[in-house]
Length: 67
Image 1 (tube, rainbow, N blue to C red):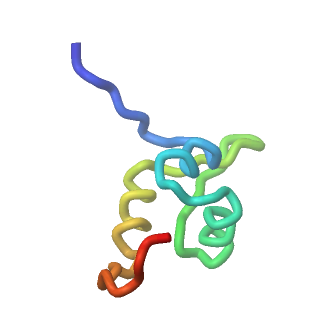
Image 2 (image 1 turned 180 degrees about the vertical axis):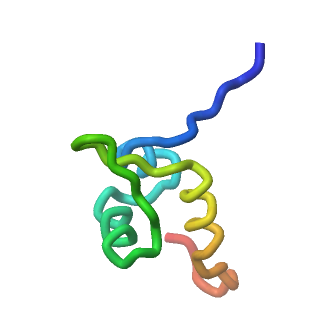
């Protein structure tokens, strides 16, 4: 049997899989950096859109020490 990956996820699921907070995700949607879809009252994010958004974030140059 093969693994099936979701086509779209909720805001809560997006926060969990990206490591970002819900507030950061909603802010990115508001800034139009992340495209959301609506199904009734539910907000969905396509997983391909999440991948594109994460890839668009600046890369770390490694100069900051992790806390």
